[in-house]
Image (cartoon, rainbow, N blue to C red; front, side, top):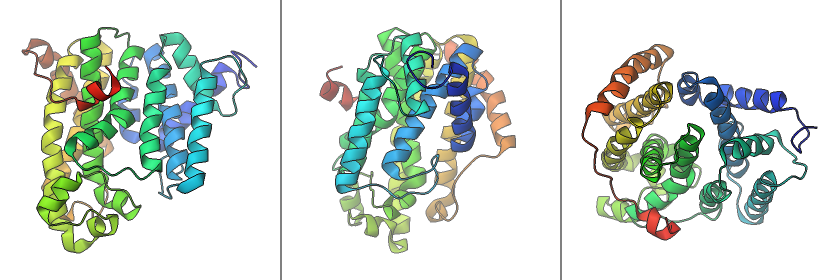
Length: 319
C-alpha cells in the first residue's frame, strides 16, 4: 500500500491509461501531446470521471447505456460521493479510480468542491432532471464538463481565475457538441438535454420517446444545429484561454478543440441522417487536427480576447 490506498502509484496510472485507451480515442489522441507530468495527471483525472459516469449510466468505459434509476441510482450516487470525499482524506479506497483522484488532488491542490460539483451532474442524470431552458442545459454542461475543464487547467498549472473560466467554456463547448452528436442515443436511453422550450417551438414533444421518433428527425436536427451554434461562442471564448497555456499544453488542448469541433461540423453536414451512424473521427483525421492545432495554438496568441458567452452556472454556483 502507498499513499493510503491498495495500489502502487504505477498500478493506478496503468489502470487509468487502460481506461483512456478503451474509453475515449479523441481524448487519448490529445493527451499524448501533453508533457509527461500533466499527461499522467490528466489521464488519472479522466479515469475517475469515466468511472463515475459508467456507474450512473450502467456503461462499460462509455459503451452501452443502461442508466440506473430510483433507489439504485441514489445509492450509487451516494457511494460515489462518499468515496470521492474519502479520496481527499487518508482512508483506504475501494477502486483505483478514486486512488487516481487522490494522487491528482494532492499533486495539484484540487479543491474537493470541484469533483463534488462534477458529481452533481451525475445526480441530475440520476433523478431525470428536466431542462426547460437553454440556461438549464448550460447548468448541466457546467457540472458534467465545464468543471472538468477547470480541473484540467489546474493540472496544467493554471491558477488565474480568468483563464480557468475560459477552460470551463471549452468544457461547455465540448458538452454541447456531445449532446448534439448523441441526442438520439440519449433519448433512446430516456434522457433529453435539449431545452424543452426549444422542443415546444419546433413542435416536438419533450418526452424522450418523441425526441427519438424518426418522424421528428428533421426537427431534432435543426435543434441540434441550434445547439452547435451556441457552442461556437464557447469555443471562441476557449481559444482565448488556450493562448495562456504553456506550449505543449496549448497544442494538446487546441487538438482536442479541433477534434470536437469537427464532430459538430459532421453533425451539421449529415442533416437528418446525422444519427444513422455515430459521428467520429478517423486516425488520419486526428493527425490532421494535430497539424491544424499547431496553427491554432499560434494564432490565438495574436488575436484580441473573445468576449465570454453567458455563464448562468456562475451565479447559481456562487462563482
